[in-house]
Length: 149
Image (cartoon, rainbow, N blue to C red; front, side, top):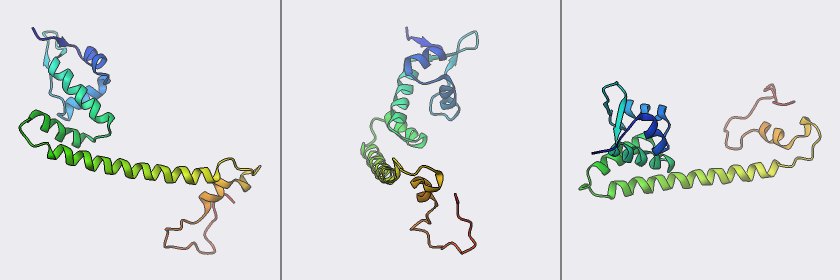
């Protein structure tokens, strides 16, 4: 006989909270389960495996739409792996871009960390934030209010 799980047990075993499970059902990422005679949801081991698959994919940063495609591939094992490989490469490119952005932010924050100014007027972070953006094409006019002054 197949093991059956309540939504609480499914949540505990999968590591996915109950509201997220209900949301995944609502958006058809997880199939709606059968109901016991008392009306409670009853999930089988296939639901637990599918939910664990979704959780792992989401932990890797795949979007809901990407998970939908990955689940479609998993549900059709005869399909070529090239689609999953393409998604993986695109996701890696996105992650690399985010890492570059984070490193840039880190460098900028390190430049203003440990400010020696005693007051906000001399705070290096506030001065850096008040500087016009070098990539901006518009120049502030003489009557443009200066922040933090």
